[in-house]
Amino acid sequence: MIQQVTSNLRAGTLVLLALPVPDLGLRLVWRKDREALPELRDVLHAAART
Figure 1 (cartoon, rainbow, N blue to C red):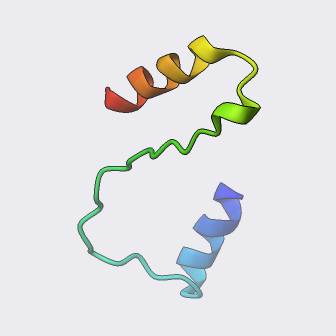
Figure 2 (cartoon, rainbow, N blue to C red):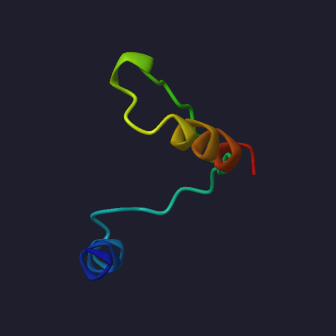
């Protein structure tokens, strides 16, 4: 995949844009009725905050 992107950049099929890259965010949507491991939700929320 990366080699294909590199090839396309060299060929001019793709161009690199000088745009600011925002930080990635994680949003969790959790259904309590499908929760097999209740403590897992807390771990995921803690990981999303870091």
